[in-house]
Image (cartoon, rainbow, N blue to C red; front, side, top):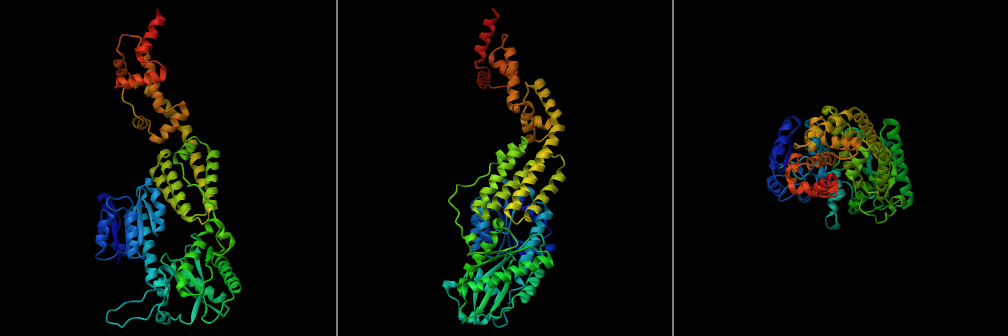
Length: 533
């Protein structure tokens, strides 16, 4: 059983998470709960979990602080972040702490949550297959090669030194590393862990015919494969010759994966290194190179030391998304302006070449899409399916250009739907204006009037402005002041007139009246009487 801890300050949310999943059926058990990060660390004193599910915003110690502390305890724990829509400013920091999944609370469905847990379970079991089985009665096991290399790659050598006996036990004493390759398979194929490793190992045996070089292959904690290219200890590599050979083999591997299996693969290739103590740095270089497929394109070899990847990005101002501006353009059916906005946004992302920033911006744009659709669709089930479709499709994209085109199409589909809805909902606005003209003296709010005509509040507000030419509040206030002007021709006190037209506060009534007419209620009455003489 894989052990799970749930950290969330709201009891009802913790209860919901615990009850929505049949934990035993998926091979897991909830071993503890906590309402903040500090409580969670106390729970972990009795044993670390395999999976940590934590909210971001919590009292005492928030989710980001908790994750940082957990990463000090273990780099292996899988972490699922729970968040509300407004918490995106924390997302980038969470990603830097190797968060496995980022889920929006309002979109959590039992099946989706279960699929995320099963995915993490698969990655946990994939790593465990490569770990030696311990036994208290048995003598110490020899160093397991793949586990030893994984430790070096992710944690580095202690004090920059490696015990030569451990190298010997792992069968690596007579070899030295040259390059590290990080293989990132495209999500369109998604082969199983065992299948992917088996296929790549078989192809490498066919491609790697140069006897002077060997290789070691193993998965990292995320289940992605890594290849360490090695040579004999006393062989002095002639840098560029070996680099050309390794690049050529990598390109051949990508080609065969594509032609024989239909898989798209991108390979990040580290700079040259000659010591096992440098393996961690080589892994960082290879992963960073592979991540640049976002900007350089997938299905190719990306070399960390190449000029195109080493190009310096000039200092730039912080990049921000204006959710209000995007929503305004959507509601105004400004497709061309929205297209230009997205082109500029993705152009700035291309200049920055920050993969984490791309992920954050993509999540924000996705949230804007998924919050606008419920405003213009009366089919809740259809909207839910569309949200799932959006998340699935976005997860399949590998390059920045693919993301740009996807968001262009998604927003255009939303605008087209809004245009159709607008043509059918114009009568609702007429009904709303008639209601206001009849019941202006009563309390009327945006929420109550939108509910009356069976439209969402945000959609109604934007549709009202488009159809009437002014906001709901501006229209309501204008109608009330017009009625007040009529009443002021009589003997009623100004304060009583305000009450009769639905504005209870005399001071506020006088302020609004003067703002619209340019004179106070008493001045207006005087002007009317003077003109009537």
